Length: 108
Image 1 (cartoon, rainbow, N blue to C red):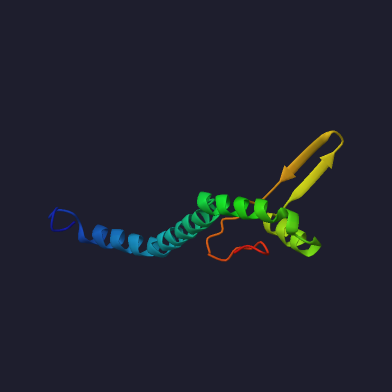
Image 2 (cartoon, rainbow, N blue to C red):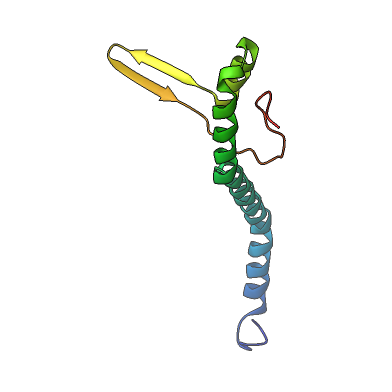
């Protein structure tokens, strides 16, 4: 700034540079937090193609699943059924299936 504004006091310039340097770690922490948040949001997004594949494989194999395979399937989708009087709430976690390994037994 001293080069652009020759009358700008050097001590004010030094104070401004010092203030900015003090805030740099705070800004870096904020940038890191935002990067982590973006990464978490990307991982939480539902892969529509993966979900379609999951539903296809599940529907083909539902009749052939034994009790332990049903348990794995229900744990995978995080199925929760809440009954409160006449109100029924069903909560499910949609799998993203980002990898190539299918999680339902018997799928090839």
